[in-house]
Image (cartoon, rainbow, N blue to C red; front, side, top):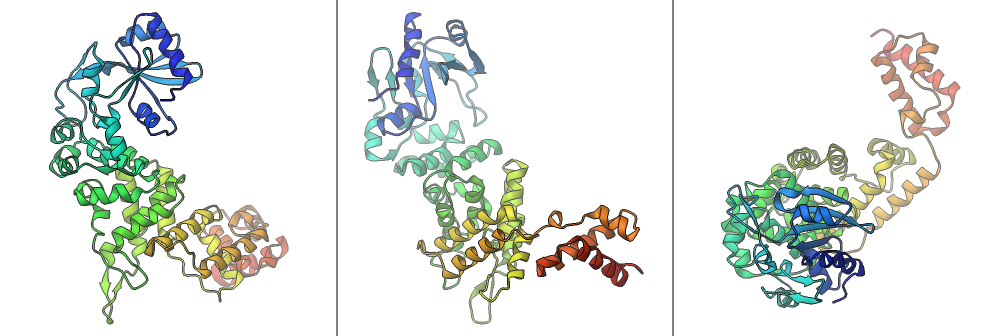
Length: 450
């Protein structure tokens, strides 16, 4: 066990004041797995007020449940007093918390065996009363004790089981998996914010599809994302090897792992197919307008899950525009209009979404020549630094008001939109003289008598 030196220095402070100090939770699990430690979780018999006394900088982050955050030598440590818990009456938190001097009592209350391993930082010994190391070796997620009881206590634990399976590429033990479907009533009590946080962690895993398959298999998906569950067995045309559900989760796998917005857009990009499906005269499924329905459903889902408004806006925009149908016959003007329509700032994500969409069809990692050609065309247009938005024009609304002697109003926006369309067709027109000439002509012929 390679224990970070800073944790030993922290433990020496506890020891000097007569307290125990253990590294617990994900930190210890990751050390066993030889993975990077993200968060430092400490368990001790010192009570919160005692921790606050022996350290200079302490934040009372969850003092009611025995947790404080200690700032020590540039790192944050979440320090929790050993505790046992009363009944879970709301499916979220224990009704009572009782501090205990025993680390064994504290480990017994945790969710999975792999999270119930503790390293004694003072005496340099490992405590593993629930055989978590064996389950790590077996690559298994196993609930501590009775899984029905564990999942009935906290409705987020079933989702956490699926999340750990995706993050660690582990299997969920048979009895633990079976308990998920039997405790969905507790999942229903969990706040949307907590569900969102778990979904974000799933989407940041190497293969989110592992979690979503488990959620679908146990009916947890119906509780969490019923719109995605409805895509199961919605078959597609010959180009696709999978139904809409599997295509969606494999597209999420193929999207860049470090981009939450893209992963979320990839997961939801075809979610409207379940409500737009019809059968052609040739007997083939078709999904006219599914991108509009998908964007509408995506907005509802992200708002329901309390994602930030900016995330909702960006994800729905990507979903709405993911169905661009590029042809090599497109003129440069057509490429400019496309960039203008979707937004220059969205081009990288939109192209990445299309690449992931293609990979998700059959899990083949080849990108179509057409998409490669389109990317090159877009690069060429962007490199030319031509006008693509109204703000790129050489005149603005004030120039139009002054030159045409007009009052501010909706007509100004109509004229600017016409001028942009003209410049997208012919970039050479983006001069002050040409734009004012076009504005005068357009106003006289189209707007003056309205």
